[in-house]
Image (tube, rainbow, N blue to C red; front, side):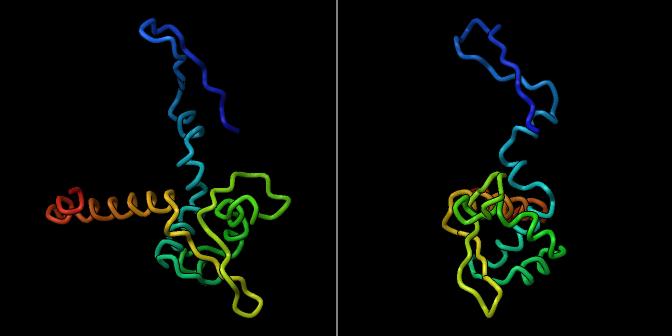
Length: 145
């Protein structure tokens, strides 16, 4: 449940209401990025899909690459698909960063949409974090340019 932020109109320098969150938890609960990458299993699935660089793969291979069990796939699949591709009984957010692309036998294949702006931004964040975590100052400087 996302908390309702309070509005604070005490700043007389502007007529706009300012959203004030009381705790970091409220900020995280209201944050779209946090909602996209949680639970941790969803973040791992996104990374596993990014590793494929837009190539399609089976759910079994994707969860194995992510180091997860098969239930993690079914718990997160609809959130990664677009709303029109999600199961009819799914009522959560649909980010539309993954799509079904064909099948092998009875197994559907899925791929991440590398041309989607949200996917590109996530990929950039992950790559920059990896570079900075490496501690290689030359690589960090080159990447930051």
